[in-house]
Amino acid sequence: MSTTASAADASAEVATRARRSRSRRTLRTRALQAAVLLLVILLWWAVAALRLIDPLYLPGPGAVLSAFVDANRCLVVDEASGRTVCGVQNYYLWEHLVASLQRIGLGVALAVVAGVVLGFLMSMWEPVNTALAPYLNFLRALPPLGYIGLIIVWVGIGDTSKYLLLFLAAFPPIVIATIDGVRGVREDQVLAARSMGAGPVDVARYVVLPAAAASILSGVRLSVGFAWTTVVAAELNNGIPGIGGLAYISGTQLNTPLTIACIIVIGLVAVALDGCIRLVGDRLTPWHGKV
Image (cartoon, rainbow, N blue to C red; front, side):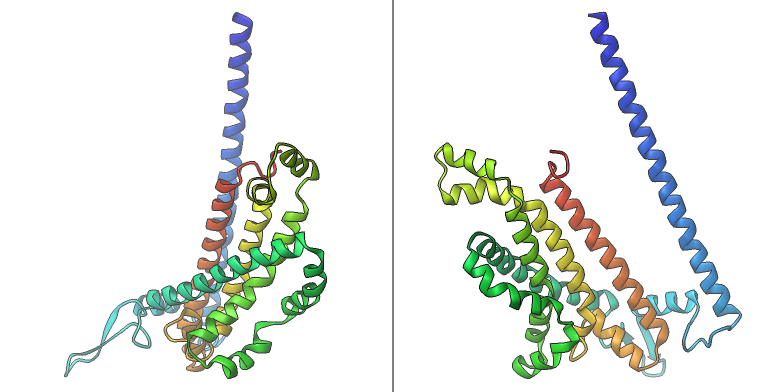
């Protein structure tokens, strides 16, 4: 009994030391990242303060922060009449961001549904793969700016064109990830399920889909990244409200502080979206990489 207790205590001690080691590594990583960020901001501030670059092209951090704050509040533009203007282009900056997120959400959601279905068909039925693979690769290689004009001609400059453009940007990665995930399923798992009486639907639902889930979620993560980088292109025409449209319009108006503020927001949201999808993937497929 004492030997068993000693072994358990030793195992617990090893686990505790491992957790502490991971915590220290995480803390050092965060400290290094914070130090680099602070250094970049200080360098940016110094360049702007010394006017090494014309403020029209590179305003200081304070000007960018002020533009961000002003874009999220109401300002009095005529004290005599009391006229106020709220946000930019009649919307707060956060409303522009929400509009873009809604467009991406719908476009990516449609791409996930269509991409997973087509990916299953292409991976499990070779004639479909042979017929459609060249066109899928062709679509994947096209930059969104290459066909945005054609989409506008087809469906106009409304939100439909934006949904379609974001759908096309997100669709190929999901299809390819689904194909890779389904084809990566071990054959002995499928044969074992069939030997126990599972039909094609049961095999697909309880064996193939769980085994391919990690790859599909990786495809979703990539597709969201592609769609988010396409948001500015999608909102070049009639993109208000929209964070991409706001970044474009403020740039054409030489409102550089607001343009940089929009770029920073777009980047931060992209990092947050990627982290959320990765966290969801870890929760939905806890076995991935461990078996």
